[in-house]
Image (tube, rainbow, N blue to C red; front, top):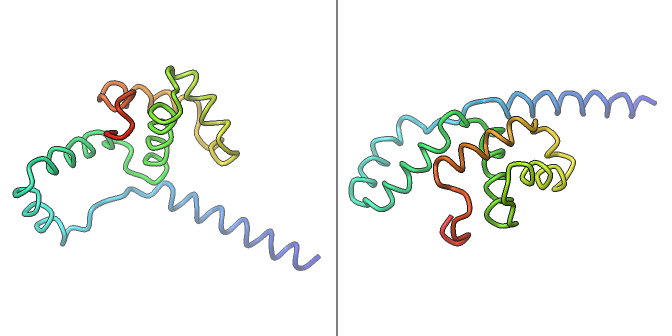
Amino acid sequence: MIQLQQGDILKANAEALVRKIRDRQINLVPDVLPRIEKFLENHPVTRDHFQKVVDLISGFETPFGMELLANVHWVANREGTATADQAVRQTYSWNNRKGMFQEKHIRLAWDILTQKGWLHQNPQAA
C-alpha cells in the first residue's frame, strides 16, 4: 500500500510538472540572438524560412502550442486530412495523450495553418 501511495504522489507531482512546463513560453536565448541575426544576414533563403516559422508560431510559443501546431500540420500534410473536422478526429485517434487538445484548439490551429499557407503543400517541402 505504501508503494502505491508513493507512486501516486510521484505521478501527481510529475503531472503537475508536465503542466507547468507545457504552459511555459519558449524563447530564444538572448545572448544567441546577435549570432543568429548575423548568420541570417548571410543566408537570405534561411532567413525567409525562419521568418515564416516565427510568423506561424506567434501565439503558440509554448510546448503545448508547438505540439498542437505540429500535430495538426502532420495530419493535414502527411495523413491526407482535408478538413478541420477530419483533423479533430485524426488527432484524437492518434493516441490518448492527444486528448489534452480541446477541439476548439485543433480548429484554431487548422485555421492558422490554413491562413498562413502551411496546409496541403508538398509534404517534402512543408
